[in-house]
Length: 138
Image 1 (cartoon, helix red, strand yellow):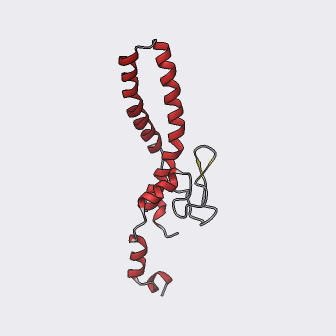
Image 2 (cartoon, one colour):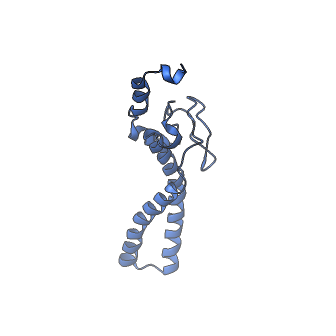
Image 3 (cartoon, helix red, strand yellow):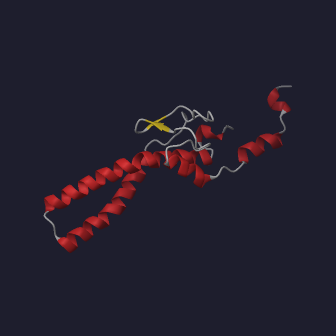
């Protein structure tokens, strides 16, 4: 008999269906920490994901964040700055070049701030929901 046949099906099913806390994992990812233990670094550089956690050895190489963080960044920045742009123009009527400069800098700064944090949160969400290769126990 092989080892997989010796394991009880109840044990294997319990490991796979065990709930992982989603919000703490996403908050750890937002902070750039391992969604599993919260101790190791998730990212190195600006957006490069580590292959695994230095503390608990959780593998990260199979994450599938892809374009999701960029889409979320655009969505949030657009929804935050568009009303501000409208209000600033209606209330103060600044020179167009001044308005453009202020909002271009704000858009760039907010995008650069949000992108790595949203990537970490998305990886934390994937880990908590056992998406992709995160379904294996670790």
